[in-house]
Each structure stands twice: as C-alpha cells, then as structure tokens.
Image (tube, rainbow, N blue to C red):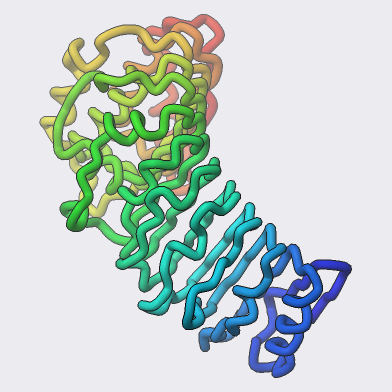
Length: 342
C-alpha cells in the first residue's frame, strides 16, 4: 500500500516490493518535491535495490529502510544534510558506500539492526548531533567509530554472536566508553559487549564516574560468568545516579553454579559501598540459582533507596517459586520500602 501525504511517502510493511514496479519513479518524483519522510519496508526475501534518487532527497529528515541494498551513486554528492532519524533494518551496504554521506549531518537518532557490509564504514566525526545509537546484531560495524559522539544519551549495544575480542583498531574498555559518552543516561548492553569492554578484568569500580546514567539494562547475562557478574556490580558502583537495573539472563545450557562466582559474591569486597540511588531491580529468566540469589541478597543489603525487586520467568514451577520466596523474604534489607514481586 503506497501512501502519499504532502511530503511523506510510506509503504506498508506487509507487502512485497516486487508488487510495486513504479516505486522508483515515485521516489524520483518525490525527490524533486521536497520529500521529508521516507519509509520503505520490504517484507520479501529479495533485497530491494534502493535507487540513487534517494540521495537527491536533500530535505529528508526521517529515513526508515528494511531489506534494502544501500548503494552510493558515482561522483561527489552531498547527501542527507538534514536527516535527523535514520533506521536501517537488514540493509546491505555496498563497498562503495562511504560514511561521508552522513558527514556534518543533523542526525540525532541512528538505528542499525542486522545490517551487513559495514566493515569499511567509519562514522568518526560524521555525527556531531547524535543522541541515540542502536547497534543491534550487525556484522562488521566498529564501536570505535562512534567514540566522538559526545552527545549520546541513549545507547543499545548487542552483538550478533559471542566474540572473543574486538576487531582490528578497536581499543575500547568500559572506562574509555564512558569518557567518550559522558552524558549517557540510558544504556542497554549485552553480556558479550560487557565482557569485551571489561577486557576480562574484575574490578569493583571504574576510574571514571557515569554521572548521568539512570537506567541500565543488561541483556543475555550469564550468572556463571565471573566477568559479567563482577562488572554488573562495577557499573552500579560507578553510577551515582542510577535508578533502575534490569537484567535479562541468558538461560545457560549447564545450570551448575560457578564456584568462582559464588566465592566472589560471598566476599564483602565485591560491594565496596552502598548504592544509594538504586530504586528498582528487575530480573527476567530468573531461575533461583545460588549465584542469582546471592546477587539479589547483595542488592537488598546494600541499596537503602530500593523500592521494588521483581522477577519474571514463566518456566519456574509454582512450588519452586514458593521455595525461592521463602528464602528471599528472610534476606536483610537496607530499605524498609523494598517490595519483592515474583
């Protein structure tokens, strides 16, 4: 379904691009008539080759593409100078595409999801106005090329698979990440990224303070991994204004606890001081393992402003829930307001 409304062109997401042979001429026509918003959602398996006319849409402020091939036209061209929002899902970049098409842009929100062919792209210095960055399961994109985006307040970082090290030229750790993103207030990061950024080190706090971080979400966290568990507490200790922590656990194939993790969580040194700002903890895929229970015990004991601790898991039997709750309610609480909800 094609919709033309003033300066907007939208395609319904449940259609195949092959059903609309006249889309290219439409885009050409609109590129000459001040098009500001363009959404192309291709639900077919075949990638839609985006015509070069898109690069002529100098007034674009919003661009949302899915299942497309992004190919830069030959010659020097000033593109997307007014773009504020760019959302790309399953978009393949041709080798000739350069990050310079976004240079000096007004881009404020960049979402790249399951994209490919970005190994050569370098956004360094191209996105001075960027405030929100989502890098979700892409192939080839380098985190280091976003380190000069000083205005970022929201970031979502999720790798497609577990990797053992960053690629060539990636020299980022947790401390340098927050030094480059001093204004970040909302962070969503997966366990793979957390482990890479921690460089396999275990520390109680970072040398820098994450002064504006309020909402922290950790995705696919494995409570049998000492580095992931320790750096979860490290982030809390380094964020003096954090209000909420949400942990989405990765359900391990082996449920046995790691003795190193248990030993770490039982040592008082892992909690160097109280976390005075934390108000809410939410844990998804909670199984009630010893490591998970010890972690919750620490949060209850060292967070005097805590108001709510909630657990979500549809797979836990009612009898198990009852046993878990019996243990949880006897844990010492630093906050009288803390409620436990399963």
